[in-house]
Image (tube, rainbow, N blue to C red; front, side, top):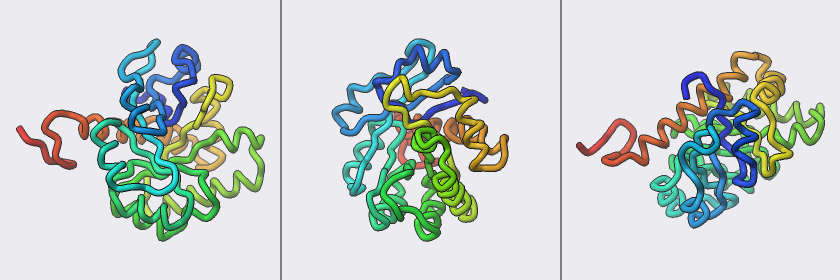
Length: 218
C-alpha cells in the first residue's frame, strides 16, 4: 500500500469497482455491530484491498472495543458528548475518534488524552462536501485540525461515504483537505501515509502471537 490513497471510512454499499476507478487502493469498510463486522469482506475486492472497521456510536464500551480490536483493523468512536470523547481517548482502545459528531465533542483536553494514548483524529469530509464547503463549517474543520496538531495528534481524512453516489476521488478529497491543512503535502499524507500506518498497526494487532504494541509471543 506504499504511497497509495486509503479511505478509512466507507459503507459496504459503496461499490468496490467504483472505488478502484476513482483511484483508491485500500478502504476500511464500516460496520455498526460486531456481527456485521464478522461478515464484512476482507482482502482484495475488485482490485481494492478491503479492511474491517467497527463504528461505535455513543458510549464507548471498553468491553465492546476490546472485543472489536480482536476482529477488525479499525475501531472508531463517534462520541455524542464531551464525556464520551474523553472516555474513548483515555481508554487507548479506540484507533480513531471520528468527527463531525455531536457539537462540542472535541477540545484541547480530549486532544491531550488522544496524544497520550496514540488515538488518531478522523475528519470525515462528506458533510463539508454536502454543504458546498460552507465557510462556517470549513472554519470548524480548520479549528479541529489546529487543535489536534497543536497537541501532537495525528489526523486522517476520510469520505464517510454511505452510497456510491457519495464516493469521491482521492484527488478531490486532497484538494478539499488542503483547504483545511493549508498544505497540499499534509493533505495527501493524511489520505495515504497516516491511514496506511494505522492499518499496518491493525494488521499487527490481529496477527498470531500479538500481545501489545512491540510485544509478540513467539
